Image 1: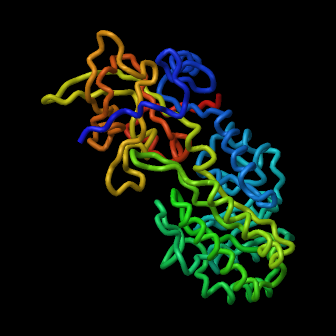
Image 2 (image 1 turned 90 degrees about the horizontal axis):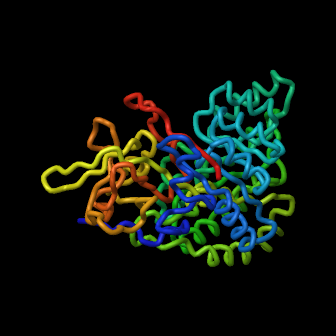
Image 3 (image 1 turned 180 degrees about the vertical axis):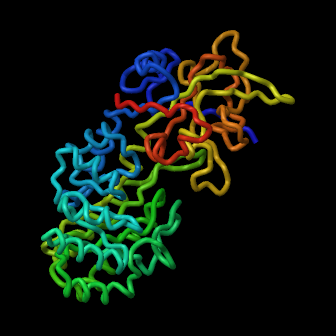
Length: 411
């Protein structure tokens, strides 16, 4: 089944050429110096943050989960625009500590934190989201060794899941967080340890485009937090409601109805503020902030035909963009929006038609676009994969076959 190239990209097209950060793609490629590269448009990131600020309740804090895109320039840019950062490794923590973000607005989640990472977090003074009893005991010990009293929140594996979620991270058996039914015992133990309790992190899923599913999960999250707070060793000062806001990637995807989600949160906040008077309420978003602001660009180095099918062979591939290849969570492979970025629609003399975009790797999995209306591309043209601002280079096997890594620029 063939699929059209997406005729109306989110980025402007002027003189038949995609523009990113105000620059024609061909000129941007010259400025970068070589392909392949990722380009992130700061104005689009700013617009998304502004949209959220205008829609969400004023006392709901916006945190960036930097695992979505840990490029230092992106993180530095967002440091002045969001209220906090959430990290998932010691390496990410080092990145955010280089920014002006105050340490009391940084939290650390993720299963399997090593003792070295827990020492690093304790020394930095950030909030650690405890994902197991082992982490709790280890952090208390290393904090005592450092003469510090680490600040902690309990990451809860809820007894519900985020329905229609592209990636379920709560409900049922999960490696994430402490099961809700075990949290009271963990809270009792925190009371005995040299730890400072700050609150809860309840994250149930990611990449969700259904407003009704997010609203249901947020409602259940607040109810669960109320039940758990009865056993807390102190007031809840932090209540991370998770995120889960998705972006459209594939034909037929409809953008999230942000207004509906925001209206529900606005209605819920008065009661939440009454029940948690000392709490900072946090919405933790990653992909939703940066995903639509990024483009992956590679150059056609060969155009070949095999038994009637045209292949555009580029200098990029799954080693840079595993997600676009369909090998990062997709059950049935679907195409990202892909364009011939320097010549969006066919011009006079072009061989318009269907083509597949592949990379230089020795595997049939190296497929960036499967039978799309890209047949007018010539050798030297630039292939642009949209919706590429999240889970790009850092989520891809860059060392596979020893090709050069993709460059990254913020424009």
